[in-house]
Amino acid sequence: MAETLWQRRHVLSLADFSREECELVLQTAASFREVLSRRTKKVPTLQGKVVANLFFEPSTRTRNSFELAAKRLSADILNFAPGTSALVKGETLLDTARTFLAMGADILVVRHQASGVPLTIARAMDAWGGTVSVLNAGDGRHQHPSQALLDLFTMCSHVQPDRPTVAAMVGQKVAIVGDILHSRVARSNLYSLRACGAEVHLAGPPTLLPAEFASFGVTVHHRLAPALTDANFVMALRLQAERMTAALLPSLEEYHREFGITRDRLRQCAPGVQILHPGPANRGVEVESTLLEDPQFSLVDKQVTAGVAVRMALLYLLGLAADRLP
Ligand code: CP
Image (cartoon, rainbow, N blue to C red):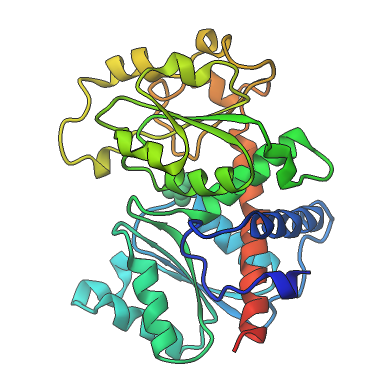
């Protein structure tokens, strides 16, 4: 099935991801989750392939889980740190990418603070010939595909623990709360959740949630209560101080008062509601601090764990494409 369904050399955005592709990633991740539960957590799938982690912006979860995923698949891994690279001597982004191409990298995992950088590198790779894949690990406020796919896997696994499928999301109300404007996580989740039949509600102050988001086929709220009512999942987003270009909030205290997820507010959600957060969290701002570790309500640790299996799935599918696509 994977051979016929997967036709992508690059994963840059979820905008055109079909329900079937989401399902394929989920099923592949589920099989790698099984591998990760064994005593020997390693398979030879990407033996001889080179995965290069090009992180131009800081990351804890994404960078390390891509590294672990590549190692579990037996790939060779190159980790690039901009501060100790030739970038500080003025090397251009594309010259850096070309250097990894010349070293024989097969998959470039790219994170950058500017939207569109992974696409620019992917176009250059295609123009230079060869079969190098580019995987967007988060670009500016544009997209974060692997995060949304691990979120999907986590939610589906909560509903269907043994054999998660995307059908688990049909009719589930998902409230995404907070700084939607600057969030690549929200933008990727909008596409995957809608493709899989979830009912998506966005909530945030008008300065962080422009009304245009309604054009994505979701419901936009500038108050928290209607978004939380009967929600099955609540995804709180980090306030992204590093991407705010103006004073968009009166204060963090007022934000927490209006949009913070608290135990009290969760009472209006559906029974069994679960909280997600892509991390890193501003504790006590987006979510009441102790909720983040509360096993009754929080899927946050499970999201991080799921990240390895989902990223193994993406690396595997791109490795498959390199051997097959013209
Ligand atoms: N969710 C996420 O992208 O976290 P990192 O910035 O730690 O990778």
